[in-house]
Amino acid sequence: MQVLVRDNNVDQALKVLKKRLQREGVFREMKLRSYYEKPSEKRVREAAEAVRRTRKAARKTAIREGLIAAPPSKVRSPSPRAPSMVRGG
Image (tube, rainbow, N blue to C red; front, top):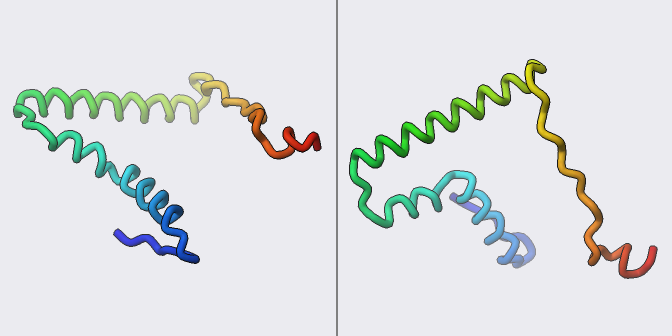
C-alpha cells in the first residue's frame, strides 16, 4: 500500500495511511491473530458476523424501500472552539 507525502507533510500521510489500513481491516485482523482462536470459537464468531452483515443489509434495503423510517440524522452544533465563535464573527 502506498501513500504520497506532499510538501514533506508526513503527519498527514500517516493519517491517510492509518485510515486506509482501518478501512481494509488490517488492525482488526492483527488483533484477532494476536492470540490463538479455537476453530469452534472462530465458527461462532464468523456466524455472528454474517448475521450482523445480513441484518445491516436488510435494514438498509427496508429504509431504501420506505418500509421503516431512517434513523434521525445527527445535527452538528458549532463547537465552542470554532474560530468564528472566538473572534465573535
